[in-house]
Amino acid sequence: MDRAQKEKVVEELGQIFESSGVVVVSRYEGLTVAEMTDLRARARAADTQVRVAKNRLAKIALQGMGCESISSYLEGMTVLTYSEDPVAAAKVVEDFAKDNKKFEILGGAMGETALDRAGVEAVSKMPSREELIASIVGCIGAPASNIAGAIGAPASNIASILTTIEEKAA
Image: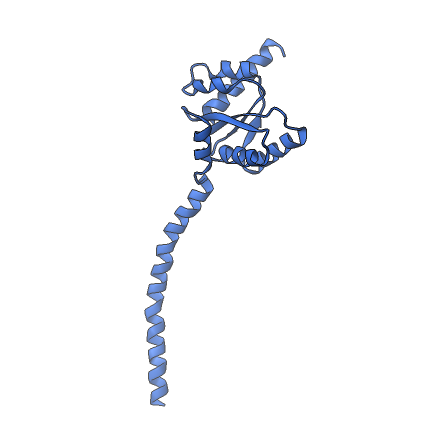
């Protein structure tokens, strides 16, 4: 890789660290190609990305950023998993780590906040953006359906009373 290519990689990694909702650093030593392919497929399904980069270039990209302290995790065979959704990447790596004992989550960053192993696990247990939106929509929609039911109920009660009166009169 020549100098221009390295500069481009450092710039791309800087964008990843700066714009991602969460970045998780993991060690993948001992995983087979099939297992890494499985990780990438799971990541794609969750709108998350996986990137293997030279640790030295990633450390250069981290210089001057709020989450620079995660550079200590960049030792050995590491992989970056990242997403715009602050929870998606953490969920993907936690699920993958349960199935693959060779895959070790080291830590990560959420914006400028550095996360240790326990922090990544805690983030993975939070509801995702889609789950939060669904619960908010459910909360907003429930009162409206209750109001509609309450408004419709008296009319049906009046109709049944009128039907009863009509039947008695006949």
